[in-house]
Length: 144
Image (cartoon, rainbow, N blue to C red):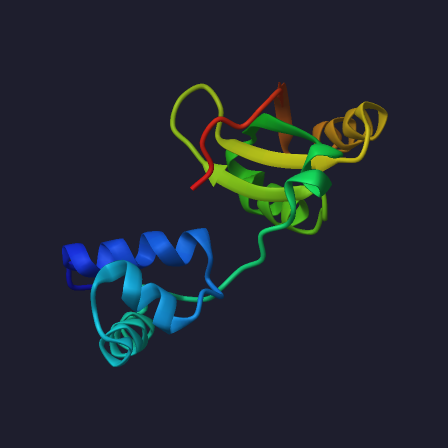
């Protein structure tokens, strides 16, 4: 993949904030024509830089959820199985492979502390999970 220029980077930043922003608004913020912005977006999609668009939910909805990082140590021979089972859990929002004392970090969400506790127990009981360590997220200071 070829590197992108500063204008494309600025465009990606704006799209991260609001992927549904009208092209005319993006163009105005970037100081470019609407057709130039549209062609840049299409080029970024063709090159695989932009692979899709997502949904951002209202802060009021998110504030009602308990979020946590669950650090997971998996048995090496069962790591793929653990990943597959975590992928099947709707409470797992993201899963990261990491270096260090743990192998994976799962970001999980639950509507209550009780349900979060149940989810963490469920993760700990998966075949191949050797150990977990959970940190509840108190607040998010930066979310890009």
